[in-house]
Each structure stands twice: as C-alpha cells, then as structure tokens.
Length: 315
Length: 290
Image (tube, rainbow over all chains, first blue to last red; front, side, top):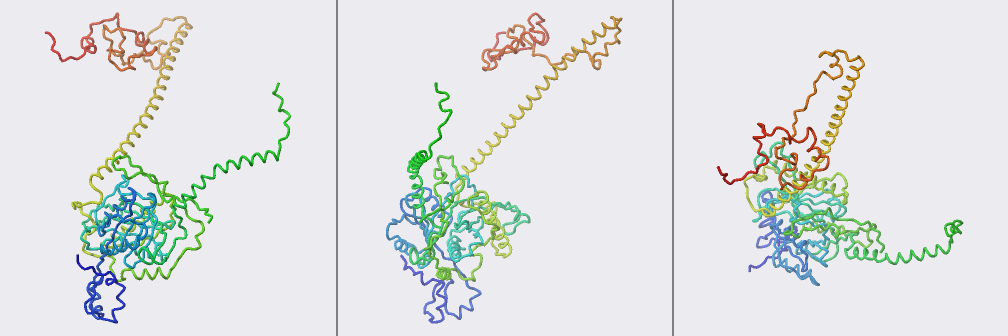
C-alpha cells in the first residue's frame, strides 16, 4: 500500500504560514502544488481548487432495516463516499472511527448509530481535526417508498438550497458549511455524471433540519445548454427521496469528541420521552383510587337532604 | 426537571406500501415523537467564538467558484408550522423550485460551456432501478383506475335517480291523460244528452270535447310478439335464465297474461312475423336432417 499522506499537510488553513519558511518540496494542498508566496500571487488567477472530499459511511451493529436502507440510499446519492463495514460501537468508538477514517483516507464521515433498534443517531464529522455533530434522526422515508415517484441520474451533481435562516446563528452557519462540503459532489469526480437534474432542500423549521431531494423535470424546448422561453415556468419538481429530519444534539470541536461547542437546549432524549409517557400511563390506576376515596369523603362531608318523595313508589 | 413540553410530532403523514416484496416502507409516523422543552435547559453550552473559529478552519476559501459548491440561499417568507403537513411540504417545494430556477439562470448566464439539461436520449444508470419504477407506475395506474371507477359509479347512481324521477313523472302524466280522456268522453255524452240527442253530424260537437280533434291513437310500441305455443306469456323463456328473470312478481305476471289485450292464444298464428320468428329455437351446430 502506498504511503499515506497526512491530511494535516493538505489543510488549506496552513496558507498563512507560507511567509516564514519556504519548504524545499512544494507542498501539496487543495490548490495544487504551491511553490512560494511570490508565485502564489502570480498564479492567483490560475489557481485551481480541487475538491477532494471523500466521505466514509458506516453504521453500528444492530441497525434496523429502515435505517440501513436510509444509509444505502445516501451511499447511492454520494458517489464520493466509501461504505465500510459495521462498527462495534461500545466504548471507544471515537478513536476507532478516527482510525478507520485515516485508514481509508477520507476527509469526512457519516456514522449511523442505532440505539435499541429504535433511535437513529447520525454523526457527521470532518476528520481529522474538524468539528463533529451528533444528530437525532426522525421521520425517515427511504427512496423505496412507492409514493416518492421521482428518479434522477445516479451521481449527477445536485443543486443545494438552504433556507435563509441558516445564516442567522453561528452554529447553523457551521452546519451549513459542513453540509455543503459533504453533500456537494466534487466537480470532476470519476463517478459523477454531467447534468444537473436534482435539487436538495435543507431547511430549518422548528430547530430541525429537514432534508428533501427533488428531481427537476422540464420538457425543455431548447437545447442542453439553453432554456427555451417558457421553460423556467414549466419546471416541475418530483420528489425522489429519501426524506429525513435532523435534530442537532451537540457540536464537538474535535472529530467524534473533544470540547463541546454547542448543545441544543431544547433537546430531549428519546429515552426520557418514553419514560415520561410510561409514567403518565402508570399513574392512571393510582388516580382512579384517589378519585374514589375523594368521592367518599365528599359524600360523608355533605350528606344529602332527606328526599320527600323517596318512599312514594314503595308499597 | 419538570417538563411541561408540548408534544411535537416531528413526522409526517402515513405512507403505506401495499407491495409485500418491498417490505421496508411501512408507516412510522407515531413512533418518533419529539418533545421540546418549553424552557431551554440552563446548562446548555454555546461557544460562539469557538464555533466561528472552527468555521474559519474548515471552510473553503472565498475565491472558490460557485460551480464547485452549487449552493444557494433561498429566503423563506413566512414561518412554517411543522405540524401542518401540506404547508410544510409546500414551503420545501417552493424553496426547491426557486433554487432550481436561480441555478438554471446562473448556468445559462455564466456560459460555463457545460450542458446542464439532460437530453432525452441520454441513457445512464439512475438512482432507482427500472423494476422499481415499474412498480411505481403500476401503483399510479391502479390508483387512477380506482378513482375513475368511483366516478363512474357515482355518475351511474345519479343517472339512475334522475331516470327514476323522470319515469315517475311520465307515469303520472299518462295517468292524468287517461283520466282527462275519460272525463272528456263523459262530458261529451252529457252534452249530447242535454241537447237531446240531436242528429249528430260528423262535424258536430264531437270536435269540442276532444282536444285538437285527435283521434284515439294507439302508441306504436308493441309488446314483443308472443310465439304461438308460448304458454308463459312472452316472459321467462328457457330453463336456464338467471334467477331474477324467472321470478315474476304478481302484477308483472298478470300483466303479461292479461294486459293490453291478453295473450295471443286464440289469435292468428301464422303471420309473416311469426314465420320469421326463431326465438324459441336454440342454435345448434349439428347438421339437420334434410
């Protein structure tokens, strides 16, 4: 196996340190080979940016069928991803996952963690030092549902749309950046297809991120490059799926760990919800008994007046 | 910690799949409820500086072309209520539509030189397989057929009601007509009697009593002719007819026997019509003896 380059060498943020030491060997960054600061200024106009994003997609063991299909759908949607085997996630899952990502030379990771066969948590992380987010996933509808009738090319680059409230707070901004980097397929990726025929919707409603994927269908009268006159109006969208809703729980500074940068104040874990419901139900019998004794006390305290007509029909 | 949260259902309408093969798409609407705390927990961490720091670390440089990111920000006009399924989906749809339109105008204007609309003859692997799309199509067709049938049934029901009403009206009219005719004959007789049985010319008072001088006119509708040897009175031929045809209700039976001049029994049997009438004879493929 070839010697793996450390990802820290390719970080774009290292640009600032160029002035101090001109390294002997030109450093390989996302901008191609960098020689020295002076050359950088010359080549500014011809800088090319290569998106070398690679996503590792894994899940935990004991994941249920619906969530597994969601994961497979995402694998279909992201041609720049690598799917890996199930990860035994007890205990040291952070370090294990980091190692796995390094091994497969990926720059981000999607980890689907299913607890109790019911709750799905999604970890989205930029490795090696990037921030990571843990989401709770709700409202999952996979692509296999027959009501989602659209279809699009496998690997065509999507158009990402974000609702305007992503720019309102820093944590949403960070999430938006992470989502853009992960979901946008690199431009000249080997497995990507040329045309643009689907749209992603990431929208914040009620502090959740809602995801939708629509196919763009135009019966276009123009050619492949020019739209006919009325085509923009005739455009319709057909939902392809999958659909899910993400509830951010925590944002960590490191990959799968590290100091917490953000904690969602409104988040209630599903376990707590279930225990609350059970407690509500459990109180039913006790309430009934209490109500009975209360009624008895009330009757004792307020005796009824003697009814004049009580004996009327008695012979 | 006391939580008097409102129960938020973060899920949507039921999606039911009636295909047993594709088993993974059952409805899941009520399992993933989400409760939101009405007061935020006091201990929540919110490190804004740290977040912005990290953002600066990971984000792509500013000079990157839009073509790499393909991301658009769409303004949402009004707050969307997550529990209102239809409006929520509509909001997402409009956001996507707006985004697609903006993107397409950008593609066109930039002259990126890359075609962005898929030509109709471009065949490549799609994200859903052909067999799956077949299933989708058959489901859509089945739904359409069901709707059409329901429509037709409703129309037939309405028509029947209408036809019934019309029939009742017609019957009433006929009865009225009959009554009127009889009345007019009576009146005419009375008149004649009063005027003392004067010699009646053909042009006399005859014309008064009857409306428009129309002679009595039997309607051209004939009862279907009864074959000579037919004892059943024309209805219910053969042994193998379906159930309800055999049972004739009392009135109907009597009508067929005695109504409108009764059975043909004693009348002419060998007429032009009856010689051509082969209703009682079943068609057989066997050669007949000549």
